[in-house]
Amino acid sequence: MGPVRDASGLRLRRARVDDLPALVRHRAAMWEDIGGFGAGAIRAEAISYRRWASRRLRSGRLVGWVVEGEDGTLAGSGMVWLVESLPRPGMPETRRPYILAMYTHPSYRGRGVASSIVRAAVAWSRAHGFGRITLHGSKMGRPVYARLGFERTWEMRLELRSPTAVRKSAPPRGADPRRARAR
Ligand SMILES: CC(C)(COP(=O)(O)OP(=O)(O)OC[C@H]1O[C@@H](n2cnc3c(N)ncnc32)[C@H](O)[C@@H]1OP(=O)(O)O)[C@@H](O)C(=O)NCCC(=O)NCCS
Image 1 (cartoon, protein in one colour):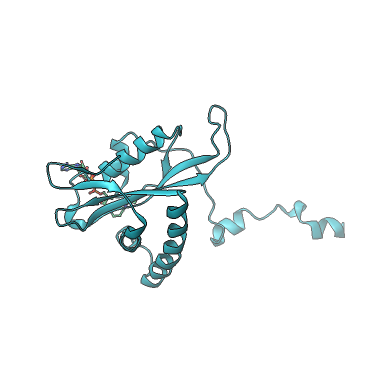
Image 2 (cartoon, protein in one colour):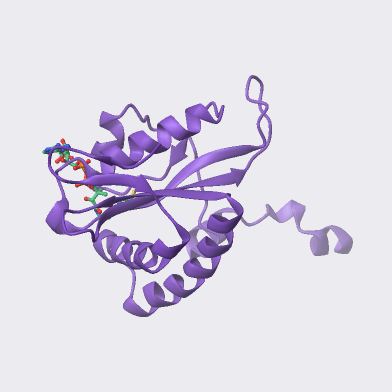
């Protein structure tokens, strides 16, 4: 899709490699707004995200959209990563689109910036034949995605570094190979 400037002066277009510095800044600002991460961890992630995103943007495994504000600076951005996936019944594709790094600058929030990016990502994914698009929604993002038809799923996870999870997921005593040998 080519650039589209709406009545409010905002312009949606595909992200380019030369947007990378701004995309990296947006992602760091996203983590800051989500909260719970130290400044050092966010700075370190920005360095590895830049490398990660640069490679994939160039190869086409990562695509993105930005919305330019009236002054040409980036009001918001969001990305779609084609994650390696495995075929499922009725879904033979081995890549699936995953939305990430959604961020709108505070002065542009509530004007449909994120919604327009998600709509573009959905249209792009549909046009490329994908049967499903997924994301992990932050507290602020959830209402935006829900309004566009996204539903919660039954994905589950176990935090492998959490002491509780380590205790709960330890093998049962009988399954300990050292004990089995001793018997
Ligand atoms: C979540 C986030 C990306 C949403 O960005 P946004 O551009 O403000 O989103 P939208 O404008 O599309 O939608 C937000 C709200 O504006 C309203 N809105 C949408 N289009 C509108 C328009 N044209 N005019 C006025 N309001 C509009 C929506 O109804 C929505 O209302 P809500 O308060 O009920 O949610 C933004 O708040 C953000 O960057 N948050 C911090 C980082 C983050 O959490 N990112 C998401 C990670 S999953």
